[in-house]
Length: 269
Image (cartoon, rainbow, N blue to C red; front, top):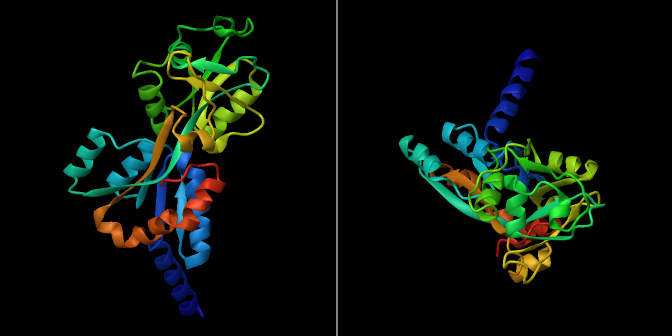
């Protein structure tokens, strides 16, 4: 009896070892979980997903503790160098796209901001909502942590690589930003479009100095009119291609992309 139990324990461990591990971007987390659940049911596979941030996922790819690194930004030069130094060749694939959305408390009368105003708010030059047409109320700024790809992307595209204010409150996950903004009247933050819900208000943004303002939506993202649009990536080692490609092919299939759209993301194609 003990031998039979031991056999099953070994068999289960072997199956788990053959599974696919995905780690990284919090923005991609919900998408990866949905895709993994559908793929596991379809193929009886064992795809497991955890978050932690883009930087964490890519670091895990370097040290060999994940099969796929989920990322909401392109891999950095220093990350490429670490993989190269370790003798690891990697591959990149775009699995979906995202409209990065600026959010405020639902009671906030401000419904639109220019890129320049957003830069002022997140760098600390603008500290009161009355400075951008709102009421006399202190602005409370929420951001992701520095290991987040969303943080990096927002800094590059919206702040033009200027530093965030030291007063900005760093949150460990997208859900924490949603919760904080929904509970703080003067709050502002940014999240992936798939995380929008009724407890927060997305605002329109202008990247042409106020000539046109565009709201974040799947429609405006597909049309290319929303300015804060980004690809979402998977990175994996070339040696693991035979292991991970069936799952990635599923994500890029009609069924997989339909799941992405249903989840609030924009199709990769």
